[in-house]
Picture 1 (cartoon, one colour):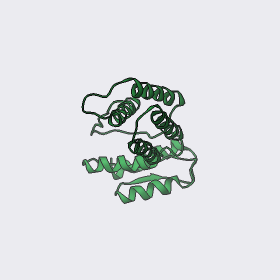
Picture 2 (spheres, rainbow, N blue to C red; picture 1 turned 60 degrees about the vertical axis):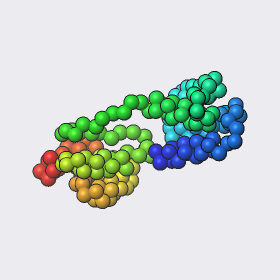
Picture 3 (cartoon, one colour; picture 1 turned 90 degrees about the vertical axis):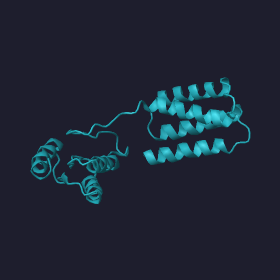
Picture 4 (tube, rainbow, N blue to C red; picture 1 turned 180 degrees about the vertical axis):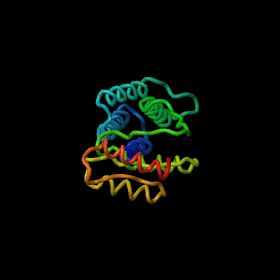
Length: 179
């Protein structure tokens, strides 16, 4: 989902970059493209509308600084507002910890889990993954495949329907192997 969001945002910005004139119509078209991209990525509609209003107001009311074209100025506004929407940069601490990945189906938890596992492993930490997704068919197979690619142990039990039991069993098993 995040790949799609990134692609849609790039397309919207590319479309603006290709415009010869940055006028009200161009800004409104950009805002509509941004709204479509964000809403399709399950961003809260209120946040999308607030972001849209802010971008439109700033793009139409603010004068570009000297030496900056209107196009560059609008692109900078979009960047600044998207960064403000996402929030501040967070430093990931390299210490013993347990991370729970929770979210909507299709939001990228499985892929992100494998990426985090690889990140921590590359930093020299001992890493393991427990798949306690008892709802999505194939969830364990997917995370196991991704973990195997990055050489990270993975525990799961696709036949078990109690996520708490899977986690307890996984912690016990992986404690012997990794932790």
